[in-house]
Image (cartoon, rainbow, N blue to C red; front, side):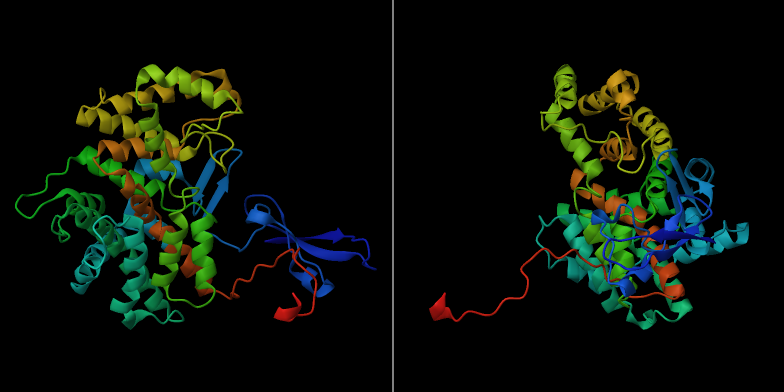
Length: 429
């Protein structure tokens, strides 16, 4: 990390303040403003859009170029050649595993997919119509009550054990959310299946029949998880880091990330895509809605197009589109009315000058929403799927932070309330 210098001159401050400037391996230079506090100054950055809250070696995004790297590896290469669990290993340990390391890691994850039997009783305390994300927040936070024997965050072995448990057990908890909502029995994990196959088995399998998951479907599910595995310092990951900075246990930290992800501005985008398709209702109404989308005075917005970070094509969307086409062909759903609307919208976005000029390309949420719909996963489960895929990213960032020197997060504020004033007795008001 190369150190340069910047100078800041502020009216009313007698001297020029010198601030270190760091240059990382990728991305813009960063001005270190920590020394401003001693000068009686804070920076003001609502939404933290210009603030680097930490140093990290895990994921790098260049929104202008449409680049997403995990430990230096482009997401397109990982999605084509890797698997979700291998990418989990990469995020956690920093390097791709050898054949032996990969097999050992997969075996370890597989051996921890079951959850404590009492957790089933925990689920039955919720209402049947409870939102799955509400259940996930509670269930993941409650894991610390069931697996408290390895919660010493200063112990690296405990941190690794907890990371394994979270990656292994969250798909089981996610599938239990769905089974509970429809009144079917919970399905135990099947250790003969891959990670994605096992999740689909627990979601859609029943005790009286053997699960038969098609390879194309399992591969698509694996890619959905992989393409959501990490995305740098987004709202939920930053929440996990902030919670972790207090010394909270990792189960509680990941539960806080799930709570942040639940917000429709973050994890609800693919759910919003499906709701938009339902609103449009028929291919014949697409032109009407495209016209509305182009009208800046109309509140209607096309969901799943463009991205807050990517000012170019979302690199994850290219791979997700491929999986989307494969799934629709495998399941024979090319004529599904809702998916016809989606495919027509995709065509317009890739050809219409308005969308091309504004770079409103279909993003990963657009295609993942279509895939999940095609697989028969209900809309209210979409964000749960997102949380399942994002778990290794949350855990990797938490582990990275705890493994080095860190301070409890304490953002500052620009106070605009009353100055000091004296209390007025009730009878004098």
